[in-house]
Length: 231
Ligand code: URA
Picture 1 (cartoon, helix red, strand yellow):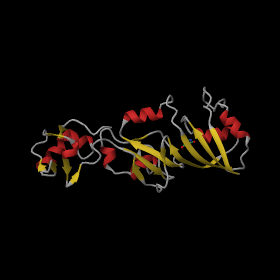
Picture 2 (picture 1 turned 30 degrees about the vertical axis):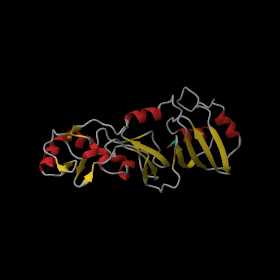
Picture 3 (picture 1 turned 120 degrees about the vertical axis):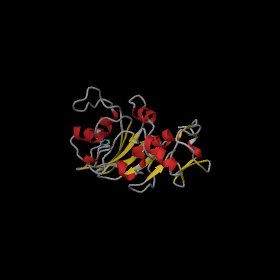
Picture 4 (picture 1 turned 135 degrees about the vertical axis):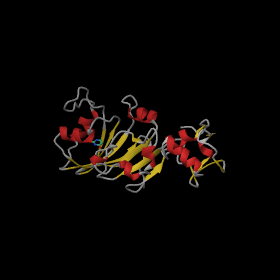
C-alpha cells in the first residue's frame, strides 16, 4: 500500500472505493456530491488523486487500501455469505464490501472462536500471510474439557503429529500449559480447524478458542467486536 497512487478517473476511484457503480458516479458528479481539491468536480472522466477527492463533505474512505485488526466475537463467520450467519464483515463499514476488490479475511477463525483477525482488501498480503512457506506465527489460548497432560508438550513439539485426512505432519508447535484445563499454543501454519484437531487427536475437546496474536499483530486491549487500523 503506497500513498503515491497516480491520478485516476473519478468513476474508477469512486467505484473501487465502494461508493457507487461507475455509471452512478456520473450522477454523483452531476449532483455536486464530489469535490476535487475543494472544487466541485467537473466530469466523471476528470482525473484526480484520491487524496484530493471528497464525497458528501468527507475525504474519500481509505483510498490507499484497508488493513485492520478485528477482535472477532464468537458467533460471527469469516465467510462473505450472509446465509451462514452474522459475518465479521458486518462489524466493519458496509462500504468496504462494495470495494473492488472487496475486503476479505487473512485466513479464518471458526464461528465459535474469538480473537485476532486481520481484514484487508490487499490480495497480496492475504497471499503472503496465508502462504505455508511464510510460517506466520499465531498464538491461541485454549480451554479443554478435561485436565491437560504434560505429555502433549512433547507430542505437539515433535513435528510428527499427522492429523486425520492429512499427509504431512503438523509443524512443531509450542504448547504452554497455564492451568489444569488452559493452555497457550503457538502455531506457524494454519491447517483447517488445526487447534481443535490437534487436541482431538490426543483425546481432548477444545471448549474455548481465542487467538491473541496473528503474526506481529497483538489484540492487546482492543474490545470484542471492535477493529483498529494497522495501516
Ligand atoms: N484452529 C481451529 O481449530 N480453529 C480456528 O478457528 C483456528 C485455528
